[in-house]
Length: 282
Image (cartoon, rainbow, N blue to C red):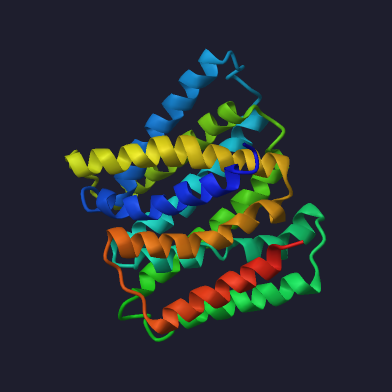
């Protein structure tokens, strides 16, 4: 069962990019995420009580997990949701943020004292070359510049969140840590709403189905699997599974959202996947 967890994660994580579109078609991205993580925090709280976990913890552990949630559920998911809401193609957003493995490998040496080889640096170069091919001349036409900036911020956030979480993974039981991370994400999006946006949510059937998918299958399912893998493996080994996500998301976007990809896009996806594979394999 443990060996199949990474593949379950890839399917669930990739599907999140697809259900993002119907959510933001029926709400602003930040209200949707605040709503989602309020329910996620409540869900993990009830589960922690049911499983007799000690929910109250030290101020230090609380703040560390809360900050991890700001990075992961706030900057990362906020960046992805916002970019797609202003026209960033789903598959390309998935590609950009899935460059996370090459950045994690580059930074896991100085931050976590994990060895980073010359082969991994070759992978880094190929990964970014592939992303450049996909982006190509589409910036400003198919790819909105603001959306590109938002996804780059999301990429940086998920990279540092993974490294940060690896340092903290043994400090708290997983469900309790997830409570505080969800709270961090919820508070982040509430602040964005108060300062910058007019929140709205249309609780249509489509929104409810898509949001239920993201709460139960992604936040409770995929995210818990990711935190488990980070806790039990090296950071660089854990994120190696992310190289499967761009292609999986692209296929799902083609099937369910009718998104088209050019030949250059497909070559870029291939080059990036090869680069990430080289950067993260043993």
